[in-house]
Length: 131
Image 1 (cartoon, rainbow, N blue to C red):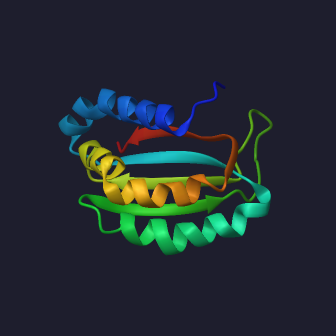
Image 2: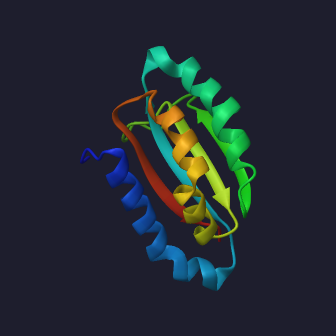
C-alpha cells in the first residue's frame, strides 16, 4: 500500500467519487463510503469520543445525509488479507452531496479530530453504489 497524506487521500477519494458520479446519477441510488481506520491503540477512546461528540452530530445535518456508523472489528472470519480494527461507514443520497460534505468548512473542522488519533497509513477508503 502506498502512504498518502491527508490531502492526497482526500484528492483520491474525490477522484474516485467523481469517476462513479455518472453511474450514481443514472441509478438514482445512494452511495456508501467505507473508510478503514488505523487507530492508534492508546487513542481509541479519544477517537470514539471525537466521533460521537464532534463528527457525528455535524455530518447528520448535511444535505443528502443518510447514515453514519463507526464499526469495531469483532473477529476476522477468513485468513486472507488484514482487517482494520475500525471502519467508518457513511451514506449519502448522491456522490455530489458527499463531495459537498468533504469540501465543507464543517468537514475541515471535525475530520482532523478523528485523523489526529490515527497512525501508520492512517486510512484507506472504498466507495460503493447501492444496487
